[in-house]
Length: 325
Image (cartoon, rainbow, N blue to C red; front, side, top):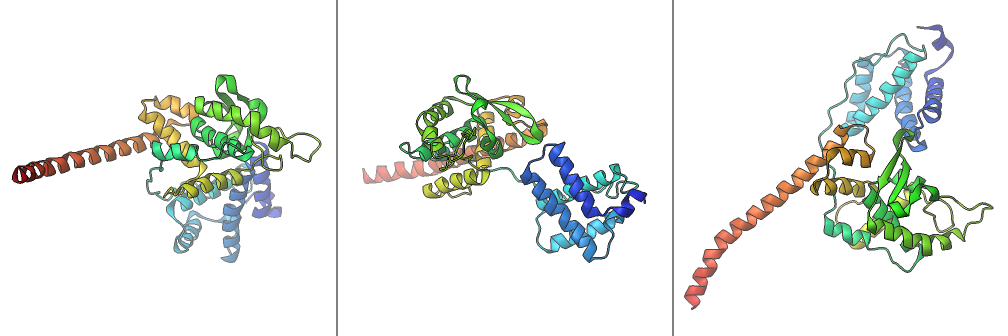
């Protein structure tokens, strides 16, 4: 073991790792919090089991995963935990805390393939038009919903938007996505109209309630004139969905899923959808082609069922009519 590890604990390395991820890799505070939780839980388990975290083996980590399974952790969460902890151990090797990557060759637990849910156009239209048009908050919420769907934005990207990043005349905005990467998002006329109404009649009233010396540059403001948070947007979307009685859990990412799937349903090229979503790999975007095909198959099955029903009911109706005649 290199001497550097002799006077620095795994927990101290974790703090340095998180600082590097925040300062250099541009990871969000939310991501850093999850990393701290995931890695910290493993380090605590090591101490409880009397394992030195800087000298573990893959077998030790498998024992840890086994205990998480017994606690009821699902495969997707196990895969995330494995990836997060392994990233930390690669960092330890780079820093000289370990002579090698102690988890090298550690495969991710298999995750069941689950297709993302989407909202059908009718339900989506009801949701988008549900906010009231006679209050500042209602105008803001309509603009948020239209932009989440019409631009396919992540909720974190939307909450971080500032006034200078949106170009209404062009139907475009510059957003900062994962890893601090900037991309151009495009949105259609419904989002443009909703944003224009919010900027004219909604945002000025909200901005007037700010108490600070300088006005908040955020595009979307809360009732106190400050920046609207990610959690507030999530709660708002769910609140409107619940009021409409939509039978599925509705969250901002569901609007992004629907945006991508509806584009592909309309014949959009996969690469274009990839660019609009800000995916680094087309493999990530391809999941929506499966959703689109599954929906088409479902519609086809329903159509054929209706044809079969009519084939059976038709002769019965004609026979009944003949008898009654």
